[in-house]
Length: 358
Image (cartoon, rainbow, N blue to C red; front, side, top):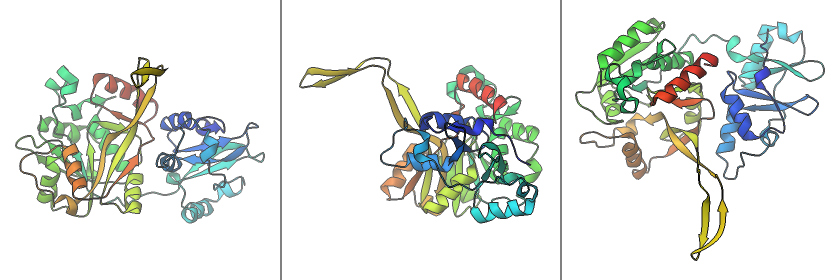
């Protein structure tokens, strides 16, 4: 009927920063906010967090109550929970993915998930280009025998993990860009995926290295792709809903989109503030926060075709060219779990998190 959601319940005074961490580890992208007396006061979704990060003035240490939706859709009538058609109508009319379930004392006891009420038989036709041609040099000796996309995460090649996640999120048309040990990657995909009969996979093999973005234009030309395309690095793992990224892109009507992830760096030394060669203050162990490129993009293919490339091109250079051409590029902040699988330590971490949550 409904699912217990202990991990999704959080107190109103918890900071936004800690709430984001809790959502990253949760399968359901919604937090139910409780008062001191354990009474339900509202919800916060991944969309609320994204809107928060797009604000000019924001304080991540603020309480989660500062961004809570105090008027969410919820159900507390036990008889209503037995009427599946009524619940489906609520999902459709209110345009929500989750509905909290409360007891008679307004205490959260569960959650209804839209996916449990609708089967998505039709898949999205958006072309997905997966960049899998790199050498994986950061992994050292590991990639001398096996290419990075074929490295297994708990028994499944990382590129298969990505394809399975995309299929779950309603995508079926894939274009894989290969170079280094491409045949081993093909074999890994053929042998390890249970969904191959439900998806379309096309391969493009570079004759020589074209850079981290060079093959995109080649694939667009060879397979006559048009309209928007999604491009994803094969060495990332995330529990983001990729459909949310596409919806955001369509809503914002920009030319292109780049997904970003907040990255924090701690400075292990005292930072000296100097004015006119005089020390005026010192800060210990400060934390610097920036947004990094998360390796997920949506491009307008017709705009890309106008970019002239002589030999090879890396992604940062391509983005600079698009900016210089006055293309509008929106950003999509990823607040969910995301990890770069380019180092041995991150692969080990991904295995642990994958076993627990994804």
